Structure formats: C-alpha cells, structure tokens
Length: 312
Image (cartoon, rainbow, N blue to C red; front, side):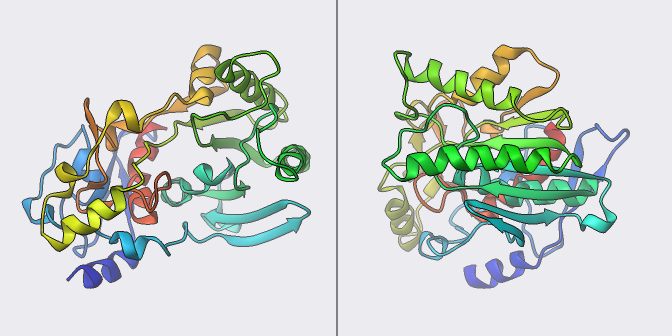
C-alpha cells in the first residue's frame, strides 16, 4: 500500500490557486492520489486538517528515504567548485530568475522552492556546496575543505556579478554547532557577522535576500524508532517525537537577518509545520520529515511549497 501511494505521489502535479492579489494566501489543490491532510497540509494553521487514516502511514519509509535524493536539478554549468543547476519554471517562459544558495540545508529546500517557482513563473538556479554556507566567516572545517569553502563563496559572488538577471536569492544552512573560526568572538556573533558581510557583498542586482530558517534535527536513533513503529503499527508522531528544545538550535542567519530590520533581507520561518509548542515530529500527515538526522525528504519538502509561497 505504501509503495503504491509513494508511486502515485511521485506523479502528482500540485497547482497553486492564489486568491485575491498575488500576495494573498494560496490554496493547494492536489490530484485525488494524494490523501487529505497529507504531509505539511496536516499542520496548516489556516486550514486545520486531520486524517485518521494516515496515523500509521509513513511515506517514504526510513529505509526508502536513505537513497532518496533532493529534487531534480538540470545541470547548467560547472566551474572549479561551482556547480550550477536549474529548477522551477522553464527559463524561456520565466518572469524572473531566483537563486537558492548554501550548503546541503539549502539544497533540501529545492523541492519546496520548485513548487514556488512553477506557481510564480520563476526560473530557479541552485548553487550549493556541502558544508559551505554563504558567509564571509571562515567555516571551521578540516583542510582542504576549509579553503575550498572560502573559494566556493568567492566563486558564488563572482558568478552572481555576471548574472544580473538574478533578482532574489534564497539562503539557508545548517544551524548550531561550532560553525566558524571565531577569532576572539563568540561563535554566534562570528556567524552572524559572517552572514551579514556576505549579504552586503551581493551585487545590487539582487534586490531581495530571503533567509529560510533552518529545519529541526532528529536524534540519531529516530529513523530506527520510526521503522520499529511502522512494523508494530504504532503512531510515530508520538512514539518518536523529539523535544522542541532539543530539535531546534539557534539559526544565526535568521537572527542576523531579523536584527537588520532591512527591506532587502527577510526571514521565512516554517517551524510551525515541523513542531508544536513542545515537540517536533518525525512523521507529519503520513510523510517522513527527515531522511537522516538533519535533511528533509523530498516528499516533505515539496509539500511545504504552497506554504513557502504563502509566506512570501
């Protein structure tokens, strides 16, 4: 049953019907293959939704998720450390071009942003490099990865200088941990300063920078917990939930963006779709949220697309 449902979901085309002005909240209409209240729809504060039939459903399963890749992205260009690929609306038909930039925690948002791109007629460009945020603070990585990250950041800025058609940039990266070489500052202060410096260095052709608040994290055993819950037909959102205080770490980029009070730099925080006031849930509306400890499944990421669109 789960395999059949997963196969159907792979072919689902989400259409976004905006009501009123372009900035008004969007409603999601999916084909009949998608159950009511599936995935992020189960936590839509604007349209409370519950489907008892999904209580023991998990799509994909943790075993299936281990090999699930991020949303497809068509290769456009490769140079040194820079890998450029495209998603969203076809460039020839696009009304604008956006870029998604950062480490693997930017890349896992691509499925959600692909939905936004198709809805708004935006062509998307993905510029991601594992372990490297868009920051002028030096990431605390073993060599040669540390120098590579500095070089990748420089190449991203150079590439954007050459592509003034990119008017909006979305950034995201893993939060928490010993992220940067602090040089006498606290970790959080050094991280915030590094993000602000990188945003200031973006060309003026980038009129809008959207910081996507990082997603919650699971425990190392959460996937095994979910797998056991499936086998025993237990309710995973209760059996395997993680305390909010443990799952959410401070996102220095989001903190830095909010402190700027800038019209150019804004924050989108969709934590409401992962967590309630006390808990963050590994399975929401029958969809597995994370494929490992920190990365979203494509299934759940894509289900966030309409709500990312609404937040924008």
